[in-house]
Image 1 (cartoon, rainbow, N blue to C red):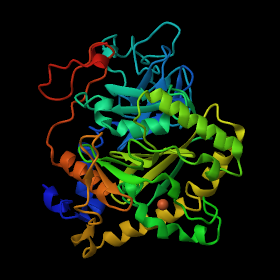
Image 2 (image 1 turned 135 degrees about the vertical axis):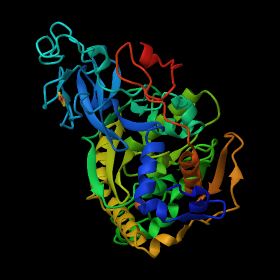
Image 3 (image 1 turned 180 degrees about the horizontal axis):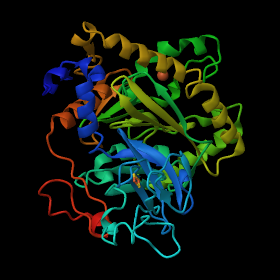
Length: 465
Ligand code: FES
Ligand code: FE
């Protein structure tokens, strides 16, 4: 059934249908159109530090393996054997010389090859005796993502060979992501993960989470309980740091958005905010000065929290986190959180970040659990035969958007507005309304062929390497 996305997502009038949060057929279309085309966050370089390290991730409904191969190249491989589809890796993370399929034993190197190399445990059992050496192993390596980028320690991939380059995909949202990732010295590898990846499942539609992180300042009431009893992140002063003059900025041409400061903002009062921990105040002041120096211009932004379309969100100030929202079904997602701290931060800051994460984030955290409950009940209460006929209201701030002169294609929406959510769903509608096919590549280290019918003009570097 073809869906009328202009009717379902009428952000020009500030309404979005509940159908897009509960419908099976829309969910299947999302997986096909959004999750095979978009740049997706798949992991952090800290998870694959050494050659032959791997980390199992997801891209939409597909299991993928993020690897660092023997040449130190980062790959994203489909976790499904080319013989009968068995998962070739059933662990979360580790180090291996080869992925050996448990079903019939085909074995792939960490760059996805099936081609035997002397001394490596790669190849096909019975290649001589059963296959009579007729199997063209070069063509039966694992499917790989044609475009993979390590952006300041974060690893991104897309299945679509025709996708724009990652920096084009980010647009001016880059400034805000940089403010989160380039926290100190502006070089990759400046951050380290605290602990592993927290993973848990929530019975909600996946879009509730990126929408919340893109700019929902309005839901403070959800977290009132920890504030009221004085155990919230700001010691009873409320959750928002009022010293930063934040606003919401939407990148209407791309669907990204952020709660942050505009390109020119004054130095925050670190000493006042961290008066009980001067080591942290001094460090953050140093970070700020370096960031301004690194940028080499008077443009600077501050990031609180933002979303990169479709399913990655991040906190940009201390403490810094990455959230990923993996769709499982229309009414279930798997949520991941990664916690980051500067490698050379003082121990006081590392300790304070670790305490913050344990106390407030994740399924057991005092504030994150509030959000999870809202998203779960909202999904459940929207799935009924009557409820799903109606639209949600996204009218806050409609008509009050202002341009940001430094960022063409972006809008400043004020502190409390649903402008960022409207931008997210406008992009969702654009991608869902497009019939452009995803341009896949076939496996094969040097003889791959494009899966897309008639696509014989493929010029992928990965493909032709
Ligand atoms: Fe993997 Fe048969 S399914 S070797
Ligand atoms: Fe919240």
